[in-house]
Amino acid sequence: MTEFWLTLNQHLAIILLLGVPLAERAFPLPVHLHPFWVLRQMALQLARRVHPDITRPRSQQRISGLMATLLLLLLWVAIPALLFWLAELKLWFAAVILWLSLFSQPWQREAKLIQQALQRGQKQLARTRLQRWLNRDCAPLSVLGIEKAASEHCVKRQLQAWFGVLFWFVVLGPIAALGYRVCFELNRAWPAQLPYWRDFGTISAALFKLVNWPPYLLTLALLQGAQLVTARKSFSLPYVRQHEQQLWHSLTLVFPLELGGPIKYNHKRMTRPRFKHPKAGSNKRIITTIKYLNAVQLFLLFIAVLIFLFVKG
Image (cartoon, rainbow, N blue to C red; front, side, top):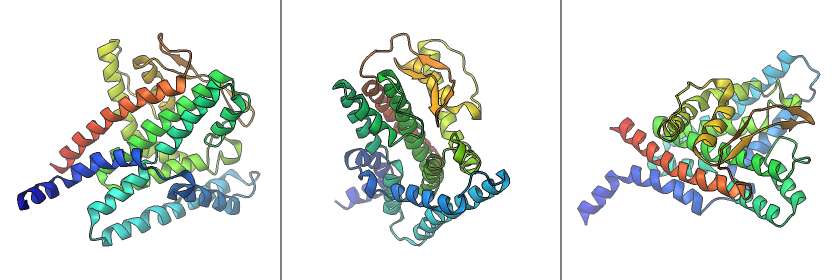
């Protein structure tokens, strides 16, 4: 029995690394009880105080955005880092941070409810549910537009946010994973695509692109590796400004999905390329996207374990 517990303790880190994503999937916190919901509310309240007027000089708006970003990073990353440094059960503390930082299931459940609403012909309900999560204009979206917008957000949540957290956790530890997630949430709270946040959110958007680059590059390399096998496509190095478009393109080359297309922010139409797999279906697109992304997540979890073993070995 003693040997069993010694062996268990030696492999506890791997067990937790595999178990926490499963626990987050099985036991997710409701949105309004999650710490990151509090973070977003704090970010919006802080922005109302330090960014009251869009007509201020751009330099002042960017300085305000920089100071707000640094303040929230100090509160949400530096303080937990201090507590982690003082904690005795660091491994379990790290597991809790990872569980909170993954935070993917509330959206996935909402996406399934959006698909159910569309199946019942309740387009307005689907638009209302979708608008709670997106910064783009959802009112004019058709059924296809709703499904594509929800599918794209699934990609952001399941691959970008979820795997980004896992990547930084295995490479640099729980505080790096927490910092990545905070950057993701600030980028979402102050979307630089909207005129009001264009300058104030510049720093948080640039910071997120920076920390998202390594996990994004790995994800894209794996997808393009699959293309080499399935479609004999050549590998192309991704560019920072084309994160989403290249991710949509790579996914639609491997899986029967349909992503991209025009998008509206603040009633202004923005053109984007369309990406569609030749065998993409015409119904239940959201559920189909979730199904394939779940398979990708399992593979990425396996990759994360390999990275963890390499880093720790």
